[in-house]
Image 1 (spheres, rainbow, N blue to C red):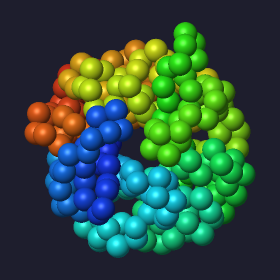
Image 2: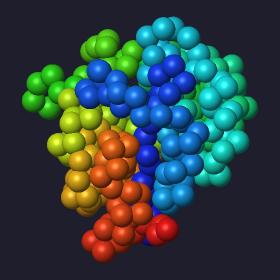
Image 3: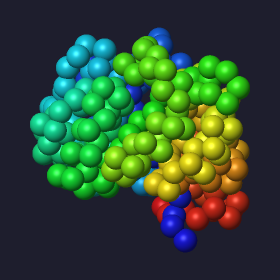
Length: 253
């Protein structure tokens, strides 16, 4: 059985890790490379860094902090933000990232997914989906760091990006983000049933039980965790020990 992954998530603004609530009001956390090293030491399986202003500012991800991370850690990491061309994709990979995440760029140019998968392999192509529940049974995809509605149905978009060649989907509930009230299990359950590629839960983890439920009830492949790690409520090792006790297969520290 494949091991379930715990992935610390770090929002980056002006070269520093911050934490937002519902994509607003960022609070300073610290240096991206130093925090990544700490989570690696705790037993993280991967890391994900999200440049939260790149799309809003219509710019590429800033390469120097990506290079510093690559020089500091030894586990895989993904960079999300500002990717609109194959050259953007290539630049981030050459800076040391193992995966590249697309949201706004994928919605604006779905063909970029297929081209990136062809050139670099589907395993490098992560589609991040930020969505809000708009009515019963309909979650709308948002771009530009949760600021711009697209009219796209989250489940249909997920199935489409899989066909285009995406290797993984990270779903973030905008309403749940940073609230510590739990993941959007209803949508995640539907999402894991709609696609065959790995699905990563994001937005809302506030307790060990929330993380367990994402794996047990929603059958996700990995869980992003941010606030409970950043503020010292839990460590990656504590999360994994609990999950192991609950019978969920994880790589123990």
